[in-house]
Every structure is written in C-alpha cells, then in structure tokens.
Image (tube, rainbow, N blue to C red; front, side, top):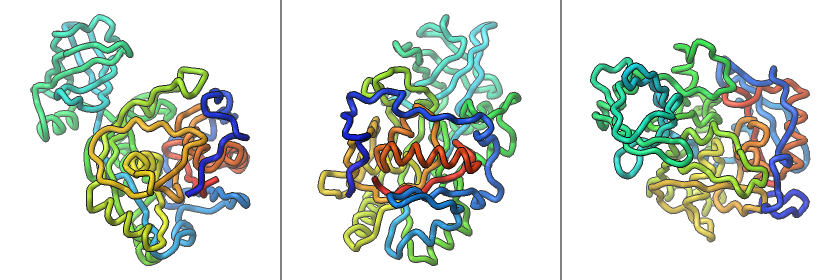
Length: 359
C-alpha cells in the first residue's frame, strides 16, 4: 500500500491548521441532498489528474473482486430538551459509557451538578440523573430506561443533531429524517451520518453487484466529535474523540479473502476507513474489532487496509481534510478542492462526492 502524502516531507509534528485551509464560499455548502441521491456529482482524484463524473460512474472505476466496505450505523435523534426545575437545558448525546451512563454536551448547563435529575421534554417516562461533569464541559447522564425502550424514548423526544452548517432555523425537517440516513443504515447508535453513504441507492448497489464488486459492512457509531472544530494550531496537539465500532469475524474474513485474491478494498467514507485501519495489523490482515477507536490520521500515516476511498468534500481545517490529505497528498487535495469550488460542486454532508486514489 502506498504511504500517504507528506506535504513536501514536512513532519506531522510541524503541521499547523493553516496547512489545511482553503477558501470555501458559503454558497457551495449544500443544505439539501441531491435528488435522486445517485445523481450527485463525483470528482475522481488521482495522480494523473481530475475527472468530473457522477456517483453512478463508480461501478466503471472498480474491478470484479474489489470489495466495497460501508458503515451500517444508523443515526438516532440525539438532541434532547431537558428541564431542571424552571431551567431549560439542551442535551446532545454522544455515546454510552462503560458504566452505563451517556456522555453528553449540555447547553445552558453551567449550573448543572452531579445528582441533579433532569426531566426530558416530549417523553413522559424519561428522566436523566447527572452523574458527573468532565473538564471538557461534557456531562455523564444516567437514564431511567435502557435498551430498546430508551431508544424508543429518544425517538419520541429527540431531534437529529444535524451539522451546524446545514441551515435549519426551525430545526430538522421531516425530510431530514430520511435524507440523513444511508441505504446501509441498520445498527442504531450514531449522532451523525456517515455521509459518503448518503449517495448510494438500491439501483447503484445493483450496478455494483452486476460489475462483480463484493460488498461488506462495518459499524462505527459517529459521535459529536465530528462536529467540533480543531482548536489547536499544531495539529498533532489535537485529541480525537473516541467512537464505538465493530468489525465482525465474518466481515474481516471477507475483506481478507478479497485482498488475497487481488481485490482492492474500497472504503465508503472516512468512518469506514478509520475503523478498518484501527483493526488492521502491520501485515495488512484485518482482525475482528469491538471497542472504541480514536485513530487520528495525518500526512505521513502508512495505510494498511484501504486502497481507494469514496468520501465527501470536507471543511477547511478539519481532521477529515487532514485524513484525505494523508491518503492522496495535501497539494493534490487542495488543487482538487479549488477545482471543485470553481466547478460548482456541492460541499459537506449533503454535498457531492470524491473518489480518491492513494498519493
């Protein structure tokens, strides 16, 4: 596998946020998805140039025996409104902790203390007890329900935690409930959608099957860390938020079988890529995985598992732009992004796609 771009041999420890900045006009940010989904444009980025395609062209870029690996996490309504007495507190859930409590961000929560009981609006039987407060401002809350009853209560009381750059002054719409789920979504637990998967439709999957492309799914429950900006100048000082993931033994075996037989691993999205890389040994063998990953991929990282990447266009100064710069090279990515801005591509969660070859 090819080593990621190194920004003219600059060590990762010397990279700053300015190395991952670009000009993004506000009108390039998509507030609605392409309709139909597989009409989205796709920029093919490779070492010999750029090609303007659509996502429906993807089967023509893959080979029989390649394996497409997508994230099957399902987004749940992670934004809750709570009350403590007369005070209204907004909660954005992140993930369950090993002790059974949930990590959450609290708006208007400075006066919240351990032991406080919060009443959740919109779900008559749901309450949350504040367990603790962390230095980063997050809190731990223990709900009085668990398992499927808890998820049902979230569905009654919660709202989708759409990215802040999607303009929804009145909150998520009914259409967002469908638009913000991928065709792969099965296992509930994500705060945010693995957005590269939003482009896929049953018709596109049928075309991939007809082209001899194998398919597999992994699970990475995307957390609230995906929305948080990098707040340090030296990028190696940034700490990734852990996210829960699973690769079954069956999926690991299918991926390893495809590679042994000459197939390439095509990751659908940076979430699938990060989980695969977290589970792969130095010899390139994918192992079953169950746990958390906080893998932070920067230029200079040596990829072990993934040969091609389908992904969206990412925010300036974001960890995801750093990841794709590691995969395909920073200068190549910034050149491609400049072309995409000029050519009218739509950016971010509801925007268009890229198909990346390694740098």
